[in-house]
Image (cartoon, rainbow, N blue to C red; front, side, top):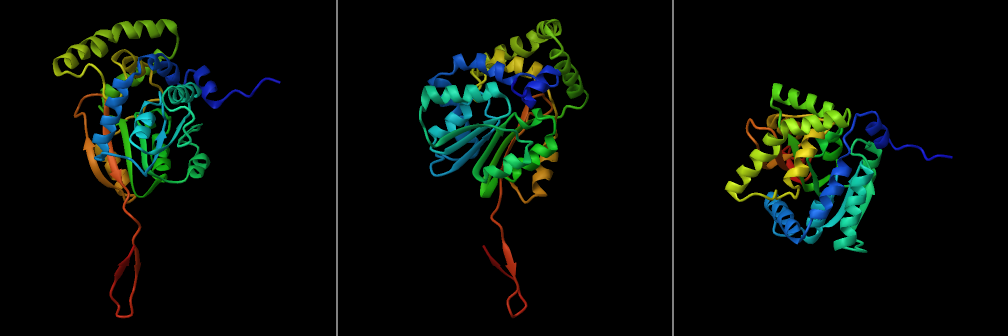
Length: 287
């Protein structure tokens, strides 16, 4: 009997999903101590913490596993998961190279849209998902499911594609076309190479940022951008309002303005306040 084809494989075959894991597999060879250091520094800076010792860390959509490794080096107990089997394999390989037999770093296959799976995970001090939720095919549900994984007083660190209006619609068409076949893939890569790679190399060389802090190299970042389907976008205020309605407070917000790319959000979930009425009719707070 042949094994049942995974949902991920079915979506790839139907040309409804880019093989993000295949891109991460190629990138894996370029991960070294310097990239790991930069990833850890970026995570430390964004979260405003020198250490994650004693904290639990959920990496939702772990990709190459670089951010998970960075969190582990900062002292967190880590759970990584991804919908793409090749991404899970990448994360597993990175663990083998740098943290073999580490019982404080678990790696699983799972989907942020699978509410039952997400509920089983429990809650975490830090929930992290950089550039993932807009690729699920249901951003609204992904935002909801991940919010529930944040422990009281915990932090949520997400990055989502910026809504550029008609320009975002253009990129959506490019991404759909890229996944239609080898010919369209080649033509779209050639057509956008000078803008997505050449101009960015010059810009980063002038500012000393040839290596992206999060870890993705320029070439594989470009491929990820061109092929990244499903694809959804959001304005910063939409995300802030979404989480404010669920009790989250903004700790940090970094936007890309009117450009394409990811806006970064760090939210904190305040502890639950239980209000009871004392005999005198006033109100007191008990946490």
